[in-house]
Length: 161
Image 1: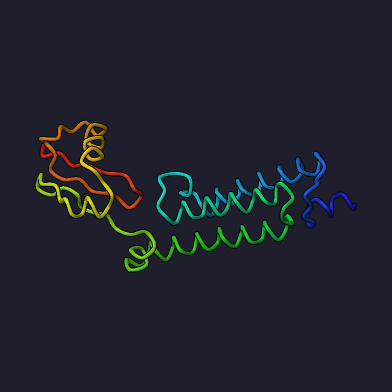
Image 2: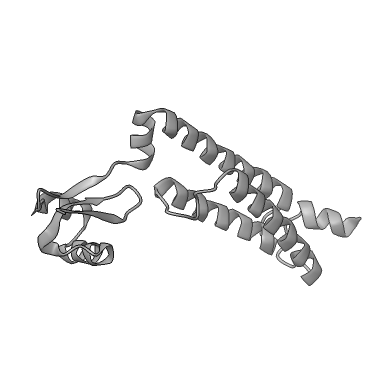
C-alpha cells in the first residue's frame, strides 16, 4: 500500500522503475481521455490557444511522470486546464468578440492580385512565403487573386480562376 501511495501522491526525484511505469500508464490513459473529450482540436490545426494548451499539458504531465510533482494534484490541475480550454472554445464559438480576442482573425496579404506590403511586414510574411503557399495550393503567382494569413498561422490562397 505504501508503494501505491507513493505512486499517486508523493513527488520524488528517485522513483523506482515500476513506479514510473505505473505513473506512465496512468498519465497515458488520463491524457488520452483529456484529448478525446476536452481538446479534440489541440493537436490538429492549431491556433494559439491550442498550442498553449499542448505545451502546458505536456509540461505538467511530464513533471508528474518523472516524479518532480505529485501525481493526483498534477492530474487535477491538468484536468482544470482541459476544462478551461473546453470552456473558452465554447465561448469563442458563441461570441465573435471572444473568438477574436482568443483566436485572432485572418490577415489579408494579397487582395485583387496586389500584395499589401505593410500587412505582410506586420505579419512577418515574405513574398517567398506566399509563393510557397501558392505552389502548395497549385496556384500560379500570376493567377493569385488573394492570400490570407489564417488564424492558425497557415497561408491560404485564392486563384483568379
